[in-house]
Length: 162
Image (tube, rainbow, N blue to C red; front, side):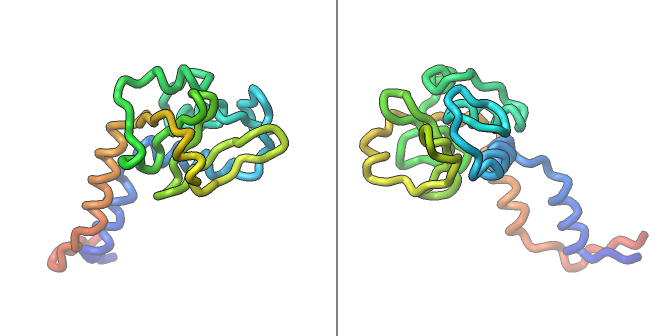
């Protein structure tokens, strides 16, 4: 079997570790539709901070249980204009937390009677915003490396015969 440069590059990209925030975000997004349960940290239901705790736990990062403690666990705070996927965003006097899923959106467990969902960040959310943290600073660097590796052209002359 002969592999082209593109085949080799594809195999190398598969072997690169995923940043923790990507693992956490995938977990949180997979819980959409799960009921909100106050104090919930299981597939039968999550509250806002329980969802964030379990999402990052899946990625190997331990977070405190409640939103206020999750915010205070990190010295570096992220401004609204610098939010990136995987960042934890805090609102309403640290009474609520969500995770940025993509530009302008977050995934969260809103309140009793609702379900985990992805939601557009509204002007009201902007006014209630307290701050954000990035639980995975190393992962952000890894994500940039992965993006750069994906955009580099595969060497045309590279071939491997197995």
